Image (cartoon, rainbow, N blue to C red):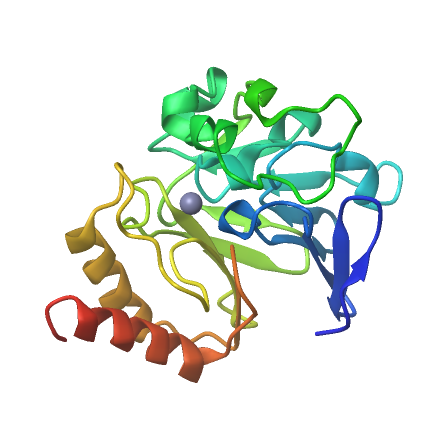
Length: 244
Ligand SMILES: [Zn+2]
């Protein structure tokens, strides 16, 4: 992956000819997520939308008239903050109704209100973490296991991979082996102790991922990983949580 180029708020890195990674370097690393912009033939894809403190839409350079499909991998604050800015909003069936209200208790937005060092740079002089809210972003299409997100020249299969959260979904291009995994799996410490996490589900997800033939994985946090590294992460989780 190319070097992270940091602008006023967002950082961007070129992954390959069709893919850019975006992140928010001035947001506390606990809620600093990766966003992925993939250019397809008939439509572009944006996976996750960050925490939503600064407008994200102007950062996504899609040709005029070309649809931008935005997929939320799950309804946690660091993945859905800017979803409301986009017209084509897709997300998990399991939490679909909650995108209509973006309840703080469901998104965990309340955690950000009291987070020490929530941001390392103020987005505006009078900005306060206590005023942080995520606007509702009703889904325009609901995604469930087996559904397909089609960009014309590539198709992504939807996998439902609960554990980190009950609604976690991921996108897998079966032809190319590219995997957008959200927080189902990523190359950093896996969070399985939130109120809506479920370790038994997470174990089943890790078992399933052991057999997924990915070429490259782009997670919600941490660096990208190949298939061998993903199996290492999954095996490590299974070992730490009751054996394989
Ligand atoms: Zn999450």
